[in-house]
Length: 198
Image 1: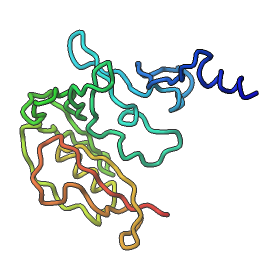
Image 2: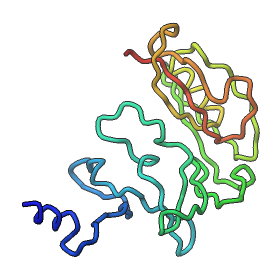
Image 3: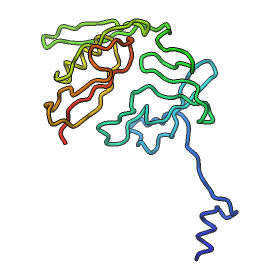
């Protein structure tokens, strides 16, 4: 019995069988959502002509039944096909930025945000390019939809993080990072802590 177990663990040749991380494109299923554990560990990203990079799946897909994934939608590292050489980072709303290059110096495509009032009036706001700087408003204490709408309309990327607070009502903003009053680049990510029940 011991011999059989050793043979299985060493793949029958005395060598320990260790499988490395998987890499590939995002799987697609027409009728169902692909389970998180069926997604490759590193997802392929187009980063230029005839060049593909790989980013950890936690930055692109949320685990099953997750109500808060702090990495999802953040600035993601992009690796070469060996999965260890860092090539640069993928910035939401900007795209791939090679290592050593500032995302705030890049030209950008125009992007718009759309909002609608309770009366049905629709507003279209153009998001400034990353080279533009702006001052973040203080949205702490605001109800979430109002605060997120204000930040998005200003031209920053909002990343939601659920937090437990005893002093801030559920559904309101506990903190932001960077804080209100800070000068940031347009399309920069702002992490927003939202009060949720325990």
